[in-house]
Length: 334
Image (cartoon, rainbow, N blue to C red; front, side, top):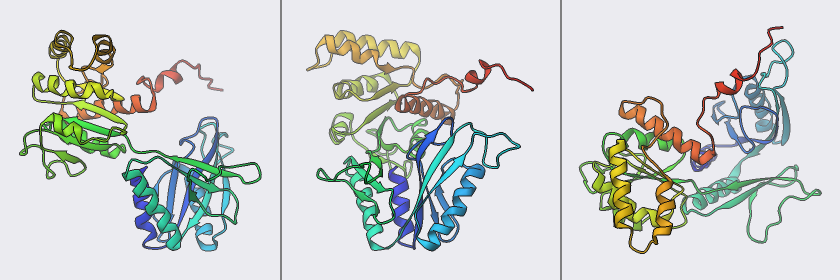
């Protein structure tokens, strides 16, 4: 989300754009409510609302909105069959709102959104579904949508933070892939020759011991942790300072023996300030060994398996193959 609004602000510095937002869905569709795509005057676009003929239709409508400034809602019918539709056969329908953003006021709004997200402030973008009003950010006194004043309400949530503890060979592709899936990435390692911006250009790098590094993290951050350290002693040190923070996710790389050694040590030694009754549930939440079972071997493959697990936890997926639902449904060849 932060990356998209940064690109929106950059595009507005160059001219007018049309923002296409999925505001309603029914049935099976390629993108969720709130998915966005922006269309620029040079014909290029950023983001997607699902691709295919449906998106191509939206782009045609966007050209008209860009030229006229007339807001409009467009229905994309994906419920037909190959003979009856040119837009796709996902099985559902999407309603997409198109609106032109232009000028200093639009740029100021985009910059305000970026600043809020970077500061870790949750805000709400309200897009009135009427021609006379423009989008605005909510304040505590801002009214939301009413039947007489319909609007689409978009929560602007701070991006989750992935703290990668350890800057070795797995951390490099992991940091890059986590950035691509819109995590704010922080890499910690006490070795500056490993923890540096040359190796981690998409991340905040903390070349310092784990305790002061964790102290720099905002207590309000949605914190995810990947322990990919060079030894179990570093895992222990990290868990001692991170478990009291109750992250959304902690995963630890290593063999079953290494994982067992770490967990047993924590059970025996405890964590200062944490009652044993609280420690056990925290230990049970650790994903170890880290990642989904993809048969991964190389550092890049391991990074993919870790990111797949991060997505499953963040989006509340089950990690099973999508083909399973199709295999369970008898297919008619009529």
